[in-house]
Image 1 (tube, rainbow, N blue to C red):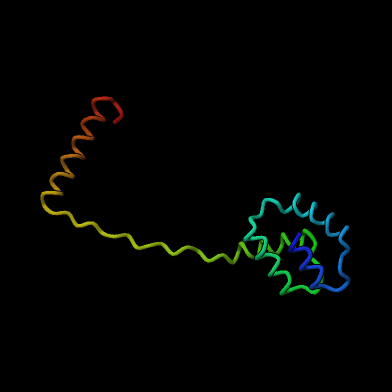
Image 2 (image 1 turned 180 degrees about the vertical axis):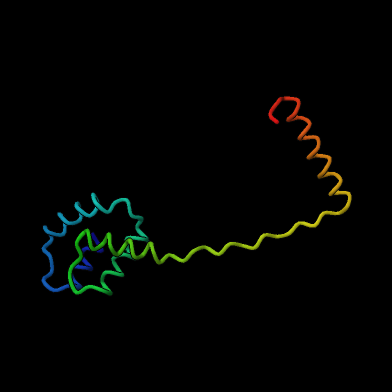
Length: 108
């Protein structure tokens, strides 16, 4: 409801309180799946690009734009593991042991 009041103030021909209450219920029904953070970003984007009070379709379109512009996470580089000679021998022994157990239970 707070965002609807802000929008009503921002655009010409403010909505009545009754209209805002009905809009609030409709928006919850149709936009309730959107997180509050993403909803607020969509509203802010709409305010920046449109001179008209948003419809549900306008908010969904702005939401889609917000989603498209989320930066991709930067993956950390893999760290190479350097084993000591003893660790390498132990690794190979464990692999052989594992393979032997798989053979015994018939999964190979």
